[in-house]
Length: 246
Image (cartoon, rainbow, N blue to C red; front, side, top):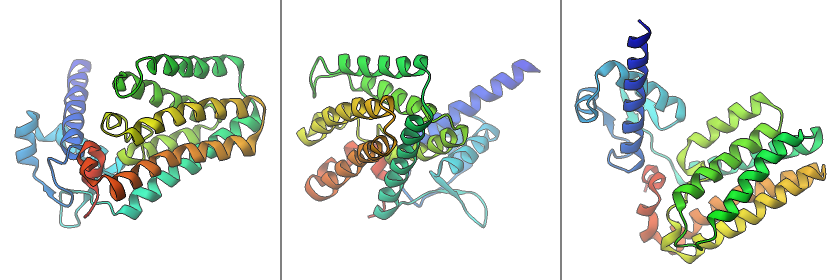
């Protein structure tokens, strides 16, 4: 029985990963109705794990349930994207402020400082030659640990939910940096902001920590504006933007 449950979870994860990849790469257009039969065949899974994956993607905000039945890929407006980025900034700002006001155990501070140190090492081969995959993993870890520093399980859950929207993720534009100097510069600025946020938390400067964290999230908005206004040809380098209308 346990073996069957484990296999079922594996199949659901396979379906979820494959379906999410298709959506984020734009291989399924925004607004397109999803055919369970075709997708099950394409992903080589049965329809039961596929349905479970669709339910999870609905929770992540990537697909919508159609009143008549079934799902379609969600279409996001530019305003939706901007709002999602702003929401992450508000939540991360709150996490940083609470961490500063409540105080953080030395072991937790050491853990997040270790991540920042490893991020510094990731910059040793400067952009665009750095290992973006390693940077993305470490950057994601930094933001997860920052949420935990707040001491609020509720805030950790809400931040995780906000970051599930791919264009609101701290790594939304990671990987596109090799195509534009403006992107590369935001990595350097972002790392400096990581250090400033931790400094403010350690000094128990709640308002400053909050402001820094909110400003840090706005780097994604800066990159978004750059793509849409100055380099629209780079839009296909940022997979999450395939979900934007227009």
